[in-house]
Length: 570
Ligand code: DGJ
Image (tube, rainbow, N blue to C red; front, side, top):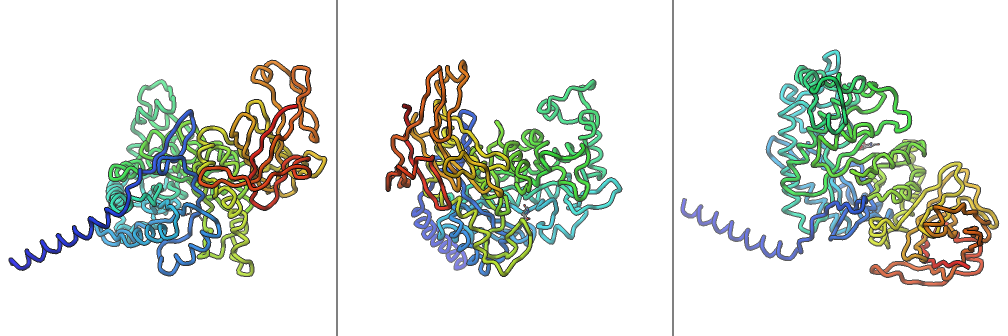
């Protein structure tokens, strides 16, 4: 007995001696956090604005086999952040037994490859279902029930009214975050996604007796206040308060409340930024109220654009509600970005897809996105082309990666400057839109004019297949950082604030960008156009552009080119 005690004490002593120097070697960095200033958000990493140049991988269940295939693709893409799922079924194979192997592997591999991680908690919900719950939960349908539809039939979606499921999820999520706190002082993990595309496809809401009772009870007052609902009764039921939207709003509240509690429990262990992602409804033609939940329509209860206010009040521990933007119609794609860029919500696009969408990274930058991540761009899955959704072994994987890689190759070397300029409100960026040959970006006394499909002597006629993208940031009153692909950028005098308010300003021709202001022509001249690159936060010019290179405006092709442009009036 005594010998046993001595060996236990010795083992503890050795463990402490080993643990202390190991921890002492790692410098503890500040915890990543969201900052809001002057109406703009930034994700602060090492206490400065950070832009996640991300990509999401398909699968994380078989790391020794799959990981080696992930890293070359990530390097090709020039990402700085990789989104990887953590599966509840693997993490908690038996009740209360947590397996940290996967998390530890991901942390160590990400560090070796010098990227950050966003970890995705695939737990109670993944794409509206409970498929990632551990087996011991899936088999105990009484304790961990599915939702019931209107006819009392179980649907392929977990009930948000199960106290046991909630408790189990909270406990497991807390263990996960506590482990991150203990093992990640270098903050490899920047954020955690709580669940994945929560909501339900098979029913607009849960019709179980417990849910029905809540549905008939008064709406929580904090929700009435947030939604500015005024009814005859001070304590209206869901039906009275929300009419045809009642079922869907009730489900949104129920799902958000559940996830909000999971998030709050995890955050209490380790206050990383947390977010929930949404399978979207069509932002332009969403259909009639009360329709969601019908199979084939859209997921009911997730953070879709119409229930963001409900999620904000039900789940304050979530820092961000984020759209998975796969909209094929460009107008719908852009509308989604606008809808999630709110005064109370930082824009973050945790999933997107289809090579024709790559240019919208610039649109997201123009709305101060804190990050962007195409889905499934690793070599573990051949069907990387979401536009056809077909595996095509005859085509090299790079073909699917190139449009995305171009974005990050261009922005990567100056990512910190771009994040800072965006947080300071000095940056604007756009992607080409069908039927819009030019876009004007106002910067005080200058307008940056972006033309698409421009040739010598013309102002741009647009391209049959839009691929162009442009970014302009104001460095000083008359100095700009300009970059992009396949577009032309020029500058046109815009007058003083007073003149813009009181005068009718007439624009001059493309060849000589000018404007008639206050009865006098003002013409733009380039004082200096320098091509260069940022090194350690400082712009290092490599050559001067002039003559043919600037006489028609600043033309960008398919190579990453960054210009610092000084302009003046004559
Ligand atoms: C959206 C989900 O969030 C992802 O996990 C993945 O299932 C993709 N859809 C597949 O298209």
